[in-house]
Picture 1 (cartoon, one colour):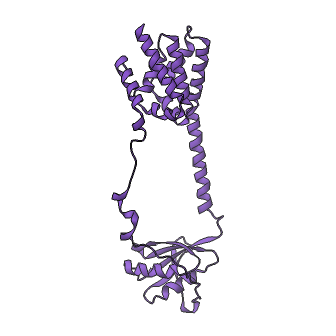
Picture 2: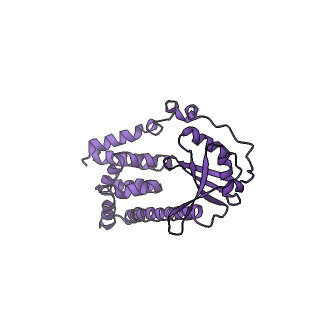
Length: 276
């Protein structure tokens, strides 16, 4: 009799703890509490079983717990046993059925959320990469003289001064620069700015009719007046960037563990009292 009283006391403690939403994630993540509750579902004392079902029902209210609870060894089978057992009170069967349906639907919810996230990503990709974005265009440049970091810096400085340049990336191995510009900015303006360095010479890379590439030079007669950015911010050099010092990172650990002494006590009790 004392063994049943001990079981009822511990399952009631877990039930009361699970009633607090702040405790539900920690209980499910603990290595002893959830397996212990599953064992209580097969207990001979109906009060123990019902109290364990209440605890499991509380834990299932947290959506983040449901998938783990469903996959926990013995969980779904124990719930089915309670539902089908002839000696189970009607109220207990109804509660077990409710918990079973919640956990059974967890897998479907995860699949639906994953599909919705994938669809959202596809829509975003179409928005940014599709032909509907008419406010910007991409120009590919082949730049003779783009041989080292100093020449690259010279090219960056020239491009940054042009109003209408959105972004650019370099492919140093093939002397290429891919520039994203406003749709109303002409590619010749890029050539004018780069050629004005007197060190670099730019050509536009276009797709040929046969699927290959062809180079189109920017002639001097095509030089355009370039509208310059006058308010260019100063940038920190990479060796002075504050993000380069990982030793200064600060993180707080143990926030959950500091208040989880009761979980360890419950888990130790279950470990000493049962075999699983």
